[in-house]
Length: 106
Ligand SMILES: [Zn+2]
Image (cartoon, rainbow, N blue to C red; front, side, top):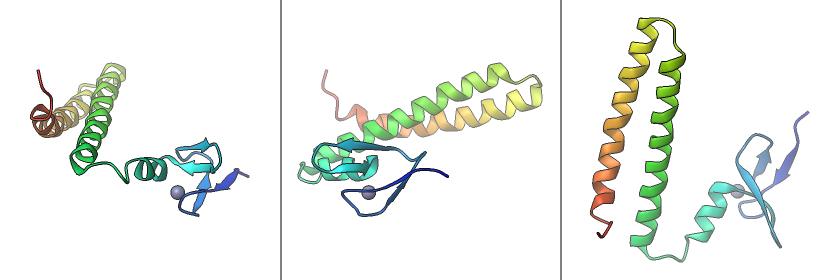
């Protein structure tokens, strides 16, 4: 039987295996609820930047995992399909980074 907690921010159930953390004075909270609450008073431009950085991080992580999967695959067929999916994700990452490039001063 898996453990469960009540989220101190949304009141929903947190099931072991979900992303959550413990915050002093609140208790267990979903990471998504924590992020939403932490950014609730932030300016819109800051929230957009955080959203883009988060989305970028997810896509870059996926790309590295696809490369690892390509190295593990033994058949050309499987390696080729994974490489094709990785290239699609790289295109998606390009869409996010084009929005980020306008927000990074050099
Ligand atoms: Zn929650």
